[in-house]
Length: 211
Image (cartoon, rainbow, N blue to C red; front, side):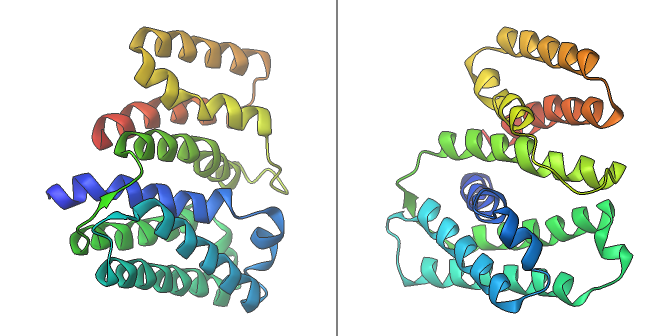
């Protein structure tokens, strides 16, 4: 359980960087159609995972763990590559897909023994930030099926600020939540409302659980 608590934020951060930050629109559009693009995506995930976990004591075992995680990531994405039904375009398949990825991260924590160079606090803050900005945005898009997904960079920035404000001061976070509510009122839509509600709650939950 200690290994899970300590290493999960690192693997979670690496997964989110590889699966979202390094996945541009071209990779997102083509990885379900071109196996070469899917392989490129897997290499980027492997690289991200490797960089966040490397540190004192990193050895062959840790390298193999990251490699196996990346191969499992490829396998999970390959299932979606093969699936051409509407079911694989739904929000519940998206959640199921990410739960499979998270399962591999949980398993990986049991087989590493290293002191990463990256601060664990930084891994927690940035993983929560990316989760808010990318994962929640795509989830809400799937739930409401608002046509072609378009990246809302201003929304990303506002939602990704949440964990930085939360760790700074809880009272500032309350003010932040009020600003989010104001943004929702000014640009009201069900998707905006859900996005910011999820952001506030996910920030509190992820930060408290992983820190």
